[in-house]
Length: 216
Image (cartoon, rainbow, N blue to C red):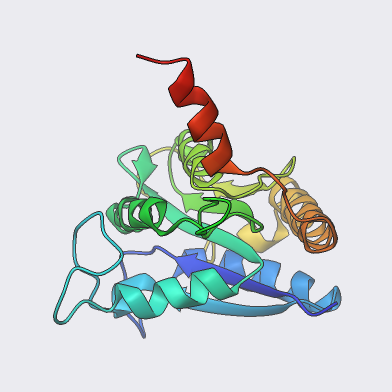
């Protein structure tokens, strides 16, 4: 079964600057490859992505090309550094732009474009906030239509305050991170296969009509 994983690296650093978030992504990408899943990484900040909540904000906006890759993938992983205890501004912008997909429901079922995909999250940082970033991002993904399996967050968080980040601190040897990245990859692949074989049948349009009959 052919499957594709897409990572959105929401680092604030443009290429070719070294990204600690990318280093953790590479570990997951290697594990996906072992399971026969192709991976692609997009460093969002390298694109001209406009602020907004639609799928196309007009001339010069490069979000539509990223969105096409999102629609084509089976597994979507949003990877973000922590800044001031929350996800990066780039990750927030990605979620805001995905809001536009609510208006692109299937003409028959009304299902959003992210239905049938599984979502995960990866986080790096030097302070507390990994649970906050993971919780909010995974909730956003499920609300947009993604299926969120168990244990699909993987993170590395160093000492509080300024200090060595994932690469410099040798985070690649951290047991908890190495354990959770494996949980994440294997559960994402399993549920992605499950959804391919058994698509979600829910007809949102029909349920909307039923709800309107009993609502003011």
